[in-house]
Figure 1 (cartoon, one colour):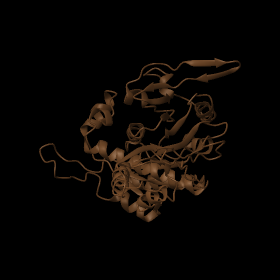
Figure 2: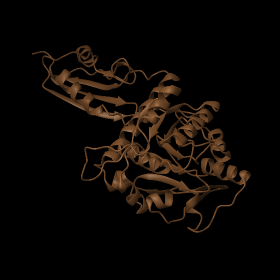
Figure 3: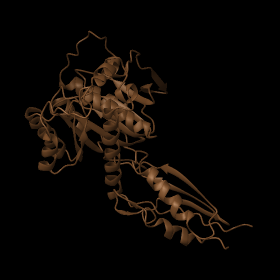
Figure 4: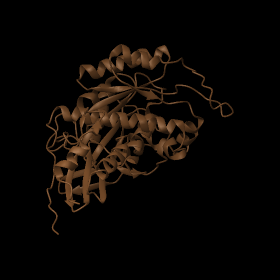
Length: 375
């Protein structure tokens, strides 16, 4: 039996459609390094983010479709990802010029008010992206109330490196994340009493003087509200997109609207709204949900404002106990419903960033290596 042609292999893969782009993975150029040796077929499917939730489905469908071709004896599918960048004022291939060079996507996590779980959400979203295989940094930009040291159980102080006259701050690392926070430089009981220009300077320093290195995503935990510190960061950081965290009660939703308006004014796309502390299920009644702050409030606001609703995170006491112990729920209870919700939100945000990035530069051409049977 004769070997299949490369055209036949591509035709077999063409019906596999990426749901975010609405196009075939072949037409999008996701099929790379296609090789045919007799009945042995090998190729790579390169996704736009490692956080793609359908990558296992893509791999299964590709094996089945190509394996069904006459003359195919084996199919080797390699799944990979090349995270596309969308940093404002990007310099080079996905970098961000003088600010955050090497960082492909800068994702802001914001809230209109404090107390809605924004910092907890930022930490778990960063961990979920890292879990998918991405390189991730997390910057705690809440100067007055830094929470990263507590949430990740860190008490060290960052070191510096010197190259000639250039001095860089080295981020701390834990759980595979590169980390920076004002909380690393102050004692637990030291209040931060700063005026606006000092805050502005610190934020600028975190963006330009920290040696973040190459990152697929830098998650920035913004200060709550729409005050001077938050506005400074939206203007200084090359933000690729923002997520707004809220609860379903009316007061939080009013403030969430203000946060969305702030991002619109500085031309930062809002990827969607997340409803935190959405419901509570008692341990002895796991199938019953109590909507403590009301039901579907964040979803209604998202529909009203024309942005995506990214999902609901339930109340789970382990979020609090794990956070207090420096063990976020993605690590403390990885099989929990709350951990699954954070993973879903992270995946949705990563896919939206990939789509936004693809709208500006042309999608890469398929990198297909045509190899004949040498035997």
